[in-house]
Image (tube, helix red, strand yellow):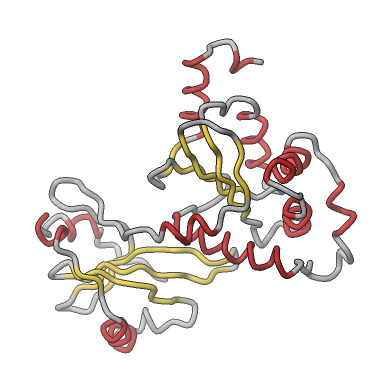
Length: 258
């Protein structure tokens, strides 16, 4: 989608807080009319997921099909001019306009969980992603305060990731799935190759794993992950790796170096 250069922040700043508080979700009929009246929204690679009426503008949630898979983006539709401004927006008090998250979709996408800490975090990860490998090594043994809910999201340009995910998900329980993820990312295990099949053909998931991968993809979009690894707190807000490590270091300044 071609971006407009007028910042949505400038436009959204003029909207009142009361409008934000009284936001009304757009019905299917209104969404259809917006698609019909906008060349941008008619593009085949764009799906208009939902919208909120903010008074002078509609706040839209879009799904964009790219070479790297489906991506969620946001835009503002000016009711008067029909212009679309892609990006985020804030009210006059600095509160960001957001769509309520589908919590059930996120929970359905959890592939397994580990840990017993009182704080819950959500980790979107790809076992072939080199940054995910760094994350696993950096946080190994340092997340005792957390219960970690893992959403496996094999990126489309990582050819070994599907077989890795299949092998991980074949674990008999959460503990074994966690052990298999660690075996790949922390120890460099190649055991997943036993089920990889013909490398010249697309990998075929087993039916159960395919269903879970689809749920994980939906959860990844819903929670708002824009890459891997991505970590979110119990309120589904993004958090930094460094925050996790800093928390561990402050609790035990020696453990972080073990």
